[in-house]
Picture 1: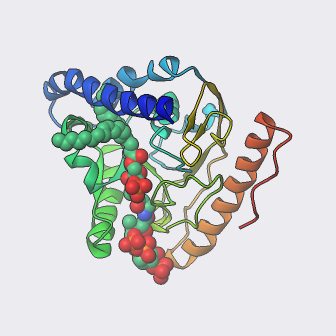
Picture 2: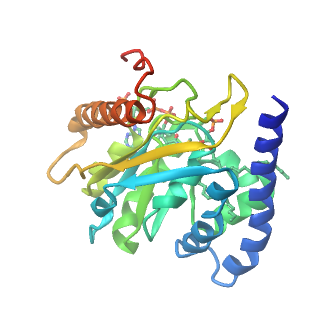
Picture 3: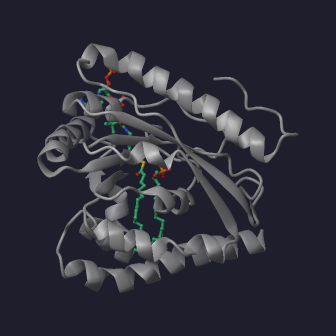
Amino acid sequence: SFRYFCKMAFYNGWILTLAVLVIPLCALRGRSVENMKIIRFMLHHVKYLYGIHIEVRGLEHFNLPEPYVVVSNHQSSLDLLGMMEVLPDRCVPIAKKELMYMGTVGLACWLGGIIFINRKKTDDAIGVMSETAQTMLRDNVRVWVFPEGTRNHNGSMLPFKRGAFHLAVQAQVPVIPIVMSSYRDFYSKKERRFTTGRCLIQVLTPMPTRGLGPEAVPALTESVRQTMLEAFDRLSGELSPGQEPRTPQ
Ligand SMILES: CCCCC/C=C\C/C=C\CCCCCCCC(=O)SCCNC(=O)CCNC(=O)[C@H](O)C(C)(C)COP(=O)(O)OP(=O)(O)OC[C@H]1O[C@@H](n2cnc3c(N)ncnc32)[C@H](O)[C@@H]1OP(=O)(O)O
Ligand SMILES: CCCCCCCC/C=C\CCCCCCCC(=O)OC[C@@H](O)COP(=O)(O)O
C-alpha cells in the first residue's frame, strides 16, 4: 500500500510539476491545439519512470486526412500514458470541467485546447459537443472521447454514453476506436498494487458515419462497444493467458 500511494503521489506531483514547465512554452502560442504536441512530448518519458512497456498496433488507422472522433476505454488516470503514446496531431481530448481547476494541470490543459464539459448539466455538455462538431470541420481538429464518461477500475467497460457518436454523426466523420489492454498485471487500485508491466494498445478500423442520422446513434454506439470489448478481451488475454475472461456485459 505504501509503495502504491507513493507511486501515485509522485505520478500526480510529477505531472503538476511538468505542467509548470509546459505552461510558459504553450503560453507563447496562446490556447491552441498545436500545444498538445508539447504536452505529448513532455509526458512521453513518464512510462519509463514506471517501467511500463507499451506496444502499439494499428497506428496506421490514424492516417486519415479528415477529422475523426477517437473513442477509448478509460481505466485510470494512467490512461494518460497510453494516450500520449498514440495521440495524433491536432487531436484534443474532451474532459470533465473539474480538470480545469487542478492547478497547473488545468492551465496546461486549457492552453492545449482541451474541450471541457460540465457533466452535471447535460444540455450544456451537449451544446459544447455540438459546437465541437463545427470546430472539427472548420479547423481540421480531431477529438478524443472516453465514452464510458468516467474511469472504470473493474477490468471491463461501462455502458457507453452516446455523446461521442452524436458528435461523429453531426460532423459526418469516422469514429476510430482504440483499446488499451487491462492494467491488472501491474496496477490495481483496489489491491493497492502498482508494479512494472506491459500494456497493449490497438487502434481499430475506422467506422464511417457518412450518411448516418441521429436515429443510427444507438446502434453505432453498441456496435463500437462490442468491437472494443472483443479487442479488450483479446489483448488482455494475450498478456495474461491464464486469467479468467471478464464477466460478459
Ligand atoms: C506535461 C504537462 C502536462 C500537463 C497536463 C497534463 C495532462 C493533460 C493532458 C491531457 C489530459 C487529457 C486527459 C483527459 C481525460 C479526461 C477524461 C474525462 O474527463 S472523462 C469524463 C468526461 N467525458 C465524457 O463524459 C464523455 C462521454 N460523455 C457523453 O458523451 C455524455 O453523453 C454527455 C454528452 C457528457 C452527456 O452526458 P449525460 O450523462 O449528462 O447525459 P446522457 O449521456 O444520458 O445523454 C442524455 C441524452 O442526450 C443525448 N446526447 C448526448 N450527446 C448528444 C449530442 N452531442 N447531441 C445530441 N444528443 C446527445 C444522449 O444520446 C441521451 O439521449 P438518449 O438517451 O435518447 O440517447
Ligand atoms: C490547486 C489545485 C491542486 C489540485 C491538485 C490536483 C492533483 C492532480 C494532479 C495531476 C493529475 C494528473 C492526471 C490528470 C489526467 C487524468 C485525467 C483523468 O483521468 O480524469 C478523470 C476523468 O476522466 C473521469 O473522472 P472520474 O473518474 O469521473 O472522477
